[in-house]
Length: 178
Image (cartoon, rainbow, N blue to C red; front, side):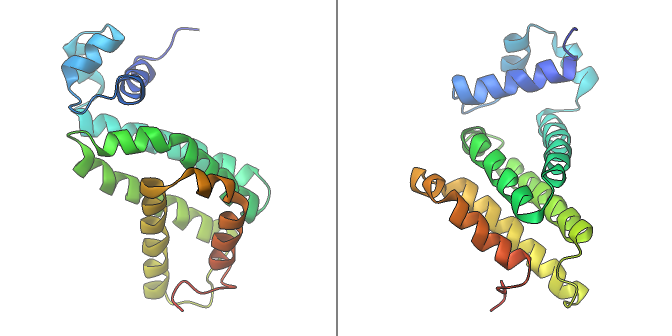
């Protein structure tokens, strides 16, 4: 089955970021990497930030479906962490490019959407006001971004412990506001 042009463009971005470690991501680099014309790129995306938004929205939907399919909140959270750890090099390299300042708020927004969906689907934080809930979700989103930015091999070795602690916070057994 032929690969979708949008997917081809997204794969080119991953290759440029992970394998070629580009610091200045350009449409020229992307179209050369996937052997398409600039016109084809602009047919599918308004600009590079639009492309990055599309990649994150598409990927986060798939990730959330898989998280929920894990069967319970802690397993879903572990899956989310594993995906984040596996995407760490792409994210870290993306943050070092000329689009880093635009990428970070997009990532935080996607984390926020994931946490909002988890809170709604699992009925978490029912005892908190909407204002407190917004603060808690912002906290979790920023924390995930910080973990991605500074994750170490030692953290990977402690993944189960970290997931369990975050799970306890999400379940309200340990308050993030305490």
